[in-house]
Image (tube, rainbow, N blue to C red; front, side, top):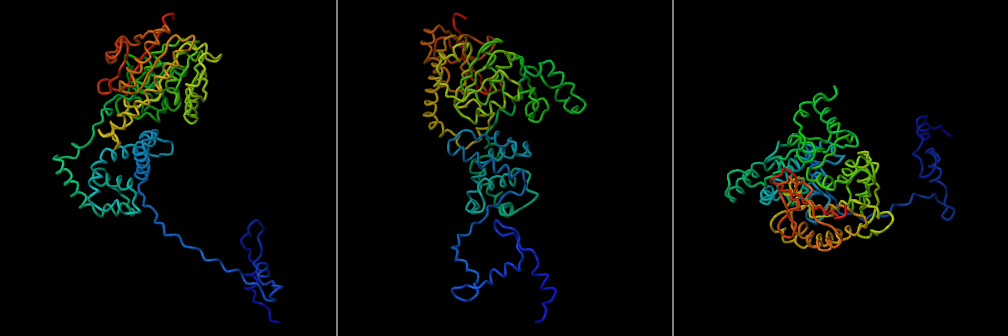
Length: 492
């Protein structure tokens, strides 16, 4: 019998890929298995034929932006628009564009905001084309690229999505002119919503658990050698006249990566949001309750003003939000915070755990209407006049919960001072909630008191003692719209 060529022997000796769950087998062994006679038929067994597979309709992959900034901006925009359309809270422009996985946060934030700002115009322009009917072109991608083409910096790298839109550049520019003509304006800026928050100073709270105001200012104005480039910014910082632990930076300052922010010495917080902790005026050693605490900026602020002494009992019924509170407490060094998952309305105010509570921060869920500009919500499609009617039912539901929570908190047996606050500008969530419980509060020995005598803006004249209530006007006070009411027990 003639010998097999050496090449064939070597080829048969190669190692095959591992079989499922087994060791590698030589191809010669596999061939032997396949050639094993079938006893019933007396003939070698042939490999089984694969069954026919029904083919699914071909799925066309979606086109994406080639620029990473545009790609991430389109992803954020898609989530924002979906959240707005479904009337679900939680998906804010800042929370999405400044998330940890976003690489160029400032650029992604800018493109997202600018696209939203121009979105009504972009939609009108695209409606004159068939681009939004292209299955592979998602609307958010089309919006971002059209923004870059008509109002932005263009696109240096062009994929299928960019080529599809830039291929109609002349037509899109012509359609834009048609939109302006139809609106009776000469420039597109006349159709955009103004954002007053762009002129607000950037605020940060000094975390007194880690650093004093004087030490923070010294660092900012004369930073270590490795951060000398920040000295110019530090020389522009001032201290707020009303709140001594709040620093004011120039409008538009990006502090997210600042060393004092990343190490927890400064907390990025609006001036309005810092009002409740100061209004409470809790003393070191007090036991304080934060009823709807997450994400914890006000909680950690109270803990800091108490010098880390005493206890702050922080409750929130949402587990994920409570995790954020715990993370914020750890980052700021607020070891006197005891965070617990619970529905505040279900708590027994006379329990051993709560009977010694002397101060309460009650900042319940609200419409957030006062934060419209800082959250950039004025850019969302739902924030038109038609949405105001739809919001009325939601406001009534929120006010009912707020009133229940306020009544419940006032029954704490040793309560001395309670701060009720919202980031709302609606009287139904503010003065009318206070009015609803005022008679009961008087019976329990509480009176409305003025936490900030020098503050110029007061509550609406809808109830007795309205002049003790604090209102913050976003158009006049350079911060979010806010409301504060303080109940003081007559025996304290």
